[in-house]
Image 1 (cartoon, rainbow, N blue to C red):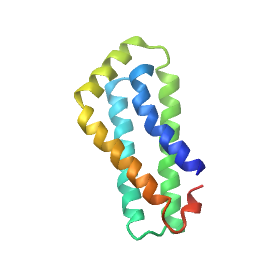
Image 2: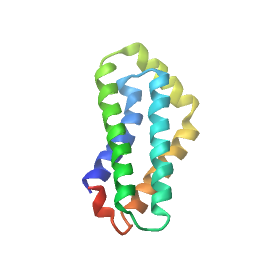
Image 3: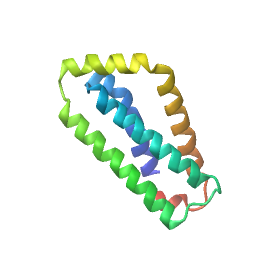
Image 4: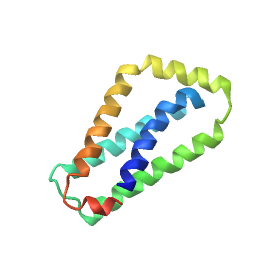
Length: 121
């Protein structure tokens, strides 16, 4: 369950970029990372079993997301101009982002219903 909390906080981070700041390119990069994790996790959850190789791949993607979040928090702390850029990006892409997060949260729940979910912690 620790991993799900981390991954949910990563998803929340992208939403929080609106208030924390960040250039459009970094926001897009974070969304792409979440989409990639979602794609891999969806494939893993298809057979309702998580083997060691799949667990390691998901852990690697999760760690990458976590590290990117830390970098962005540090890089854009207190920078108002980046806030305006990211606000516009999120506003212009609201529907797409809602879909990305919906799919992400659904697959996260599906992973924890799989045999071997304990390998993700």
